[in-house]
Length: 65
Length: 197
Image 1: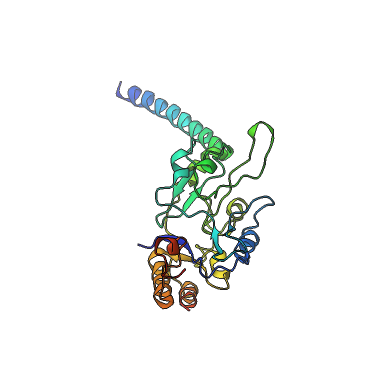
Image 2: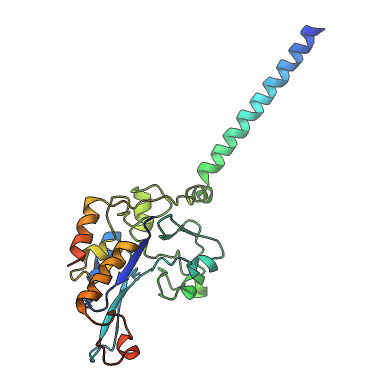
């Protein structure tokens, strides 16, 4: 009786695994095909780019004349 | 924390339009779009002044407030950028902007304008920094290269200043002190008659 229960549970897990893989593949196809989704993902780029490099320091020095 | 700002010294601007040309060339801006332009008042008369104008990257930007599809975002250093993928070309930002910064590539029937284009402070857009896609849509990302906008770097008289707002305002303050009058700003002579400029 115990062995039968184990076998049934294993089958159900196999089905769930297959369903999960299918859903993930569909999701990847949707994201890669949609420009809007890509744009939304990248629109969060609000980090800092400015840093006081030698180039910029030279610019500031020249602007002081 | 550095906050990016443009400042145009009207006492120094000689209306050479090098900033306009530099911007168009560096960012390969299409025909019909000027991200930057030089405005002259009292042209040919005493008191003539010119000022170079583009997106001023407002702290509380009206374009951001009116955009119905929320294409705008502001970086940590205060640069107002937008996503051309999301823009619907409605033109609300153009009406809201006091500087006329947003530009549209088309003037078609039924109000079609195309995607909005504007000065990015040479900081690209939402795409990966320094990528080809970013360059094609938004122009050069000079900030990521450790440089400042080319319009300001090219300015021969250093009238157009760009960079960290604190440094830029320090430079301008020094100029005001060395000139010994006014602030070099428009309207100073009217506000304080007999004190120059």
